[in-house]
Image (cartoon, rainbow, N blue to C red; front, side, top):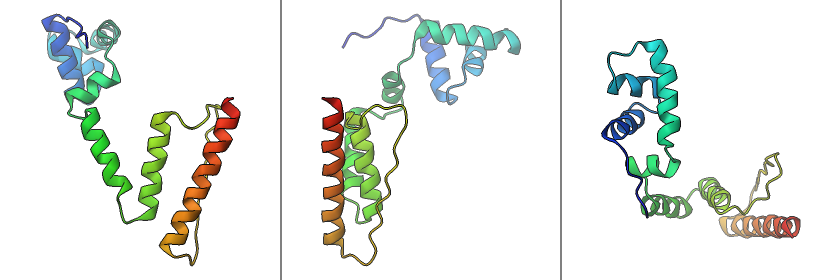
Length: 140
């Protein structure tokens, strides 16, 4: 990957921005303590636009790289709690772009009363397959 060459000031701004939780004003004040708070807000926003920090860069800086995230997703999928597995599976589908883009997010709740885990798993797999087929049909 091509790393963007940044000035020392830009690198310090990015570090401050990430460490303070994403506050551009506070990040600008960290690199220029002589600025007043009102102008720091405007200048911080300008600096943020200039450095154009990508989400991927921020995630990597805080240690949330692809390998770590995949490991966490696998942990969630292996959970004994069915509702947790469904949430993780939903997140994977969202990340992979399986859901159709429609502007309105559809929420589907699956409630299985009195079913054994094997039966619930089969129903869940069938429901997921129906959603996938419906989405494939709407994308074609």
